[in-house]
Image (cartoon, rainbow, N blue to C red):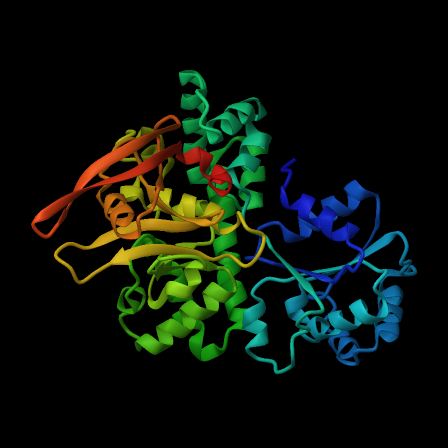
Length: 451
């Protein structure tokens, strides 16, 4: 069984005095429905689940915005009463019944004692075809990403969890534990965090079977695009989806995603996929202060896939490549390592996923830092190295220009932290630059939130 950390967020939501209906967002097959079912079972509530994709005729009922009528129809469908004291109403696949989104506000206003959770995938595909106001301020949101490495490890090799946590605190860990964690990391880069793939790996231990699950997931996405996308954009959308993994870690040029279409048409596809969390933008920012979004350059961005295992599958990656890669060159010149880090940084905050990086162009030498995050009240640059070595030249430039007191490196070394001093040229003069380098192994990326 895969235990998701987001269950604790659901528990806090359930205890709130002024609880709003909760809309779970996330890519298809990241485990939204399973999370709700397992949560309801754990807290001892009666689950009232309605899959709106299977009952499309309910759209006209929700269109009425009449909560009494809606509840009566749900009771007729389920064959039991909706008891507000010990039950939770779960509206799954809400994108199939768009007017149910607008109706959520009336559950909040007229039946606040009934906990209501809705979940949907590819919502933006549906919303693009409908015109109605979203219930702003009347519903809450929880974004769910793929299974995290810590969740994978707890299910696959729980004895290593204390060492993972110790590494995140920069404590010394045994070489044997570190080596085992690196091997589990390699497995995760192949399996990824899609729950069906993880569960297959846990139950069968077969990487061949995992590949078949990943193939099925990719085919399901292609089928979904056919359901929700306009006919004239379907081929373009599928093409961008297929080419996206090969462009991970690169500044996006639309011609690399589609050389047969106008940039504006390719941009529309990227926008749609990003809003539906099928991919994730990493936007360049000046990074001169918080919030990082204030310094964004929306025209300069990179893209991540929804999941490292899916990205590896779409690129044709093989287990032999991952298992035999040296610590110096893990795979794909670090593209999978950058994907792994990015998908974890995205969901450290339960709010809307948001990622930034630093890019300096136009001078004698370009400089780029893979990610920049907010660590408390400070701006923290994050450099990702696929192996155990690599230049930190861009980190040096960032700390020089932004006067950053610390920087984070993620690679395959054991945890450490130490002061760094280097001389920087300023015209004819030179100056000493000082910062603390925080070095964590890739597998401890989730500790970044506490730095």
